[in-house]
Image (tube, rainbow, N blue to C red; front, side, top):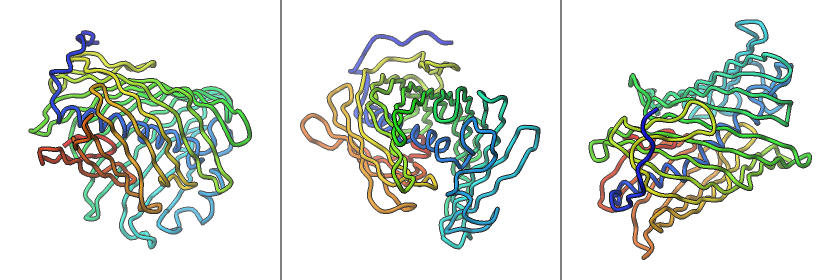
Length: 341
C-alpha cells in the first residue's frame, strides 16, 4: 500500500481535472447500480438460491433464441454446484449486431455463500471491442437478505492493463415485499492516459439512506445519497484497497463531494431513468438526467461553477460510453462510466 493522501490542496486542481473527477463521481452511482441490478434482477439466478433457474423475465424464450434484441442461455456447470449464465444484447431487435456480451459463472458454495465471476464485453457498431469489465462477486447471507462484495477492473480495447479498478460493498435488508434498505461503501481508481490529462484519479465514499424498490412491472430503482472524497496523482500512482471498506491511497486529496438521486432499471437490466445532482468540493454543481426509452436511453450531464458558467458537459449511452466536452473545447472519451481516453 502506498503512502496516505496529502492534505487538501484545491489550488492544484485545474478546471479540467475538476470536471474529470466530478464526472467519475456522479456516474459512479450509475455504475454501482448496474452492478447491483445485475445481481438483483435474476439473470444470474436468485442470489443464494439452490435453483439454477433465472427469474421469469429471462426465461421467456428457448435457450439462446433471439427475443427482442436479447439472447439468453443458462448452462449447468462446468463444475459441481456451478452454473454459467450468458446474456447477449444487440443493437437491433433481430439480434444481428452484437452490442454487449455478458458471461457469469456462478458457484454456490453453501446455502449461505456464493461467488460469481462476471465478464462483460461491449462492442461498437463495427464489431470492435470497446471495453472488458470483470466483476468478482462474493455473497453471504440468505436470499433477499445478504451482503455482497464486488471487486474488479475495466480494460479498454485490447490494452494489457486496466484503466479502472473498483470495489463495492453493499448489504441488502428487506423492509417490505417491495422495498429493501441498502448500506454501501465503494472506491475506484481511474488511470487516464489521455495526453491532455495523463493522471490518475481516485474516489471513495459511503452511501446513506439507500433503498431498493421493485415495482409491479419488475423495474428496480436504487436511490440514496453518496458522500465521497477525491484524489489525484501522477499516472499510476494511486492504489485501491483489496478489501472493504474500500479506500484510495497515494496522491493528493482534493476534497469532498455529495450527490443524491436515483437510477431505475427494467426487468432485463436496461436503464430506464437516471436523476442525480450534487456539489463538488469547490462549489461546482453537477447533475445528470436521462432521455429516451430503453434500450436507447441517453444520460446527459452538466458541471457548472458557482457563477453558473459551464465547466463541462457530457453524454453517455446505457453502457456508460460517450464523450465529455470541457469548457476549453477539448474532449475526452468516456468508456464504461469513466473518463479514460
